[in-house]
Length: 360
Ligand code: F0G
Image 1 (cartoon, rainbow, N blue to C red):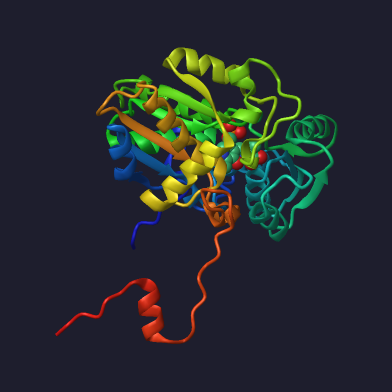
Image 2: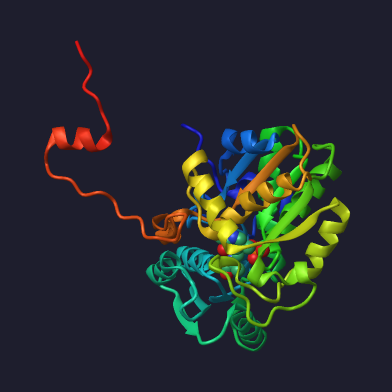
């Protein structure tokens, strides 16, 4: 029988805290492509690869952590999970919970999550509540509910989430046959940044890789608490997935930056959208705005002379563009893109396309 990728818990069973007693709740997550990006290599002089996490079952990296968190929740007898979310965690929690036959409750900031993600959570039968507050308010309430009611918290403050997400670093090392020199990720709660660091640290300890990558994380300028060194009360950015003012894994992330000689930077929304266009139009990978910040971060650090020529750089792009497609229909000058309309007329269409008939 042809080999089918079995999901991260089965593929990395020996590297995760699971046993025969753990019911494996999987939708086949992980095993995502690491794609060479010649256009970004040409722009920077580095050897750039893109880890396309939008290829996971619900379209984001969250599935790696959610297979672990929901499996462990079911093992512990949970009948319901809860999370706060800017969208992707809720879509993933809803899908894995429903697959396991348990219920999910999700708290999202009202009017601030992308339509694709809202639709996913509802489609997967979550009890979705729009809270009239921001993500940080939602997480506070989710933690309080999990502490006092029979609901299992599946935000990344749950270590099982980080454990599942560290598998992405294993996959990178497998493909490159070592760790890269730099690894760049978008940062919201800094859970994923911390998870990659853990995964790479374990590979180094096992003697599979020879180094730790320098871990570079980027926040949107309007919600950059780690860069600023203080909580941002009213975070703002078009990259709604990372609109977070008080990251849950702040301390883990600071430790990871120190050990890996890493970096945290802030990127403007305009630069995020520019990077989104470059990734779509030059590399052929469609992501949501928050994911494009990895590309923007690379270009910014490269322009600052901080990325040596020939360095191996892996960018994680965290979520699929189809979740939040509206940004592609906005031109660089901010105007709406309107596709040209034509009649059912081959000659006219050839003319509009600028095609010149081949002569015999
Ligand atoms: N990229 C995307 C597409 C995300 O959805 C998130 C987080 C991040 C990056 C940042 O990851 O929080 O581990 O630093 N989304 C969470 C959610 C907050 O609720 O979906 P992080």
